[in-house]
Amino acid sequence: MLKKTFGNLIRVGFISLSLALLSVFTGHAQAPTCTIANYSTGAPYSITVCITAPVEGTTISGVTPITATVSVSNSGPRVNWVDFYLDAPPNNYLLRDYLVTPSNVYTLLLPSAHFKDGPHTLTFEPLMVGEMNASTRVSVNLFFNNGVIQAPVNTHQFTPRMSAPAPGQPLVLAAVGDGASGETPKVPDLIASWSRNTFLYLGDVYEKGTYTEYFNWYGINTSFGQLASITNPVIGNHEYGNGSPNDYLFYWDNVPNYYSYNA
Image (cartoon, rainbow, N blue to C red; front, top):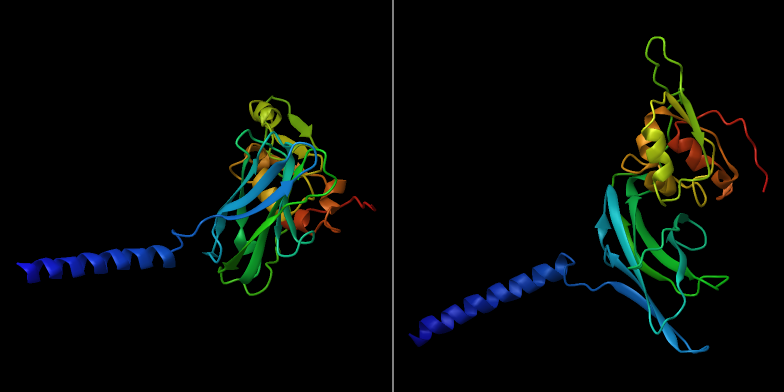
């Protein structure tokens, strides 16, 4: 009886150890990566900035959800906006999110196949109200695995997008700009409710017109994305925010660019 019980204990212990090791190797046991900054000006407060998913060392492929949080203690300053970077900030900017939520949870969809395979560092930083520069940031190291050896190139050619009006009906054109930044979808929802045939987006996908911003603010599951099939884009100055409009041209299949902006 003792021998049988001892054997069962060994088996249970082996199973528990196996599950623990599996949890470690699959990343489930890893905690979010966080940075805490303490401030003593006025009433003391602290800001905790975390990347909660994916965790440190994760290998990612395809479109990967990123989740980050900001926590402020003792009635410290509010979040003004948050920025995401790939590799060394302030270069390699991905996206700025102006949509400040009460929970201070921020998400983006990272199109990892748009970047070369290999190790990358994802950085998240908030800018608090009253700050001139972000003072707290957090980073995780990731590995991209999509079979992408060189940065992808879009060789397509843009063709005008519109639907034909019904016989005897006028062609309805809608136009708006300066609005795709992840905030309230009232304007694109209103336009989508019309019997419109074509749509001009008059420039400025915020903040710098990166591919990641287009993917998140104008992608297929976004409020402006519902107009993508009839969108004829016009470039704005924000599309030059990274020094060139390359991501704008990539996203819109090399639409002819008749506008040149010098900052």
